[in-house]
Image (cartoon, rainbow, N blue to C red; front, side, top):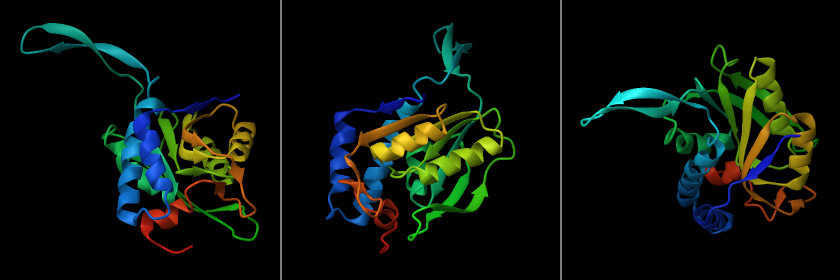
Length: 210
């Protein structure tokens, strides 16, 4: 069974509280999302493999660690996941970025894929799926299935806020993919929104009305 890694840190918790506030304006919401994502990136990548290389400093030659995992590919789920990309690139500037476009059918509450744009070969990549919310888990499940169908084997799911229902559904569908999250909330309401959550992340990031 996959693991849920809750990345606990006072800075993350405080910034997330400000994001939850319904009076937080769009610009601040975006900035906080960027900041939290950057902080979470350290937890989500802490076990990436390293290797020793020889480096000549101004004083002497010595061996030091460097990443040995090959390419990292970020796979934000459109549209809200786009808000996490720059925060990840702040610490992984050489990462590739692909996009998986999905929207939730408001009647069935099921995800519908409308776009998938990824690097040509992701079979050897460490792929980090980005989406602020893990609610029912439907979009995350379908996105990871899409990645696996294209050859990805090392996949991580990264969310700000998750509902227990979404976690359970995701773990059942993808028991080999770990989840990295800032907070696990109480559950879902009748509209499948996370409670207490922070509202519709996409609308709040882009200043639109749901």
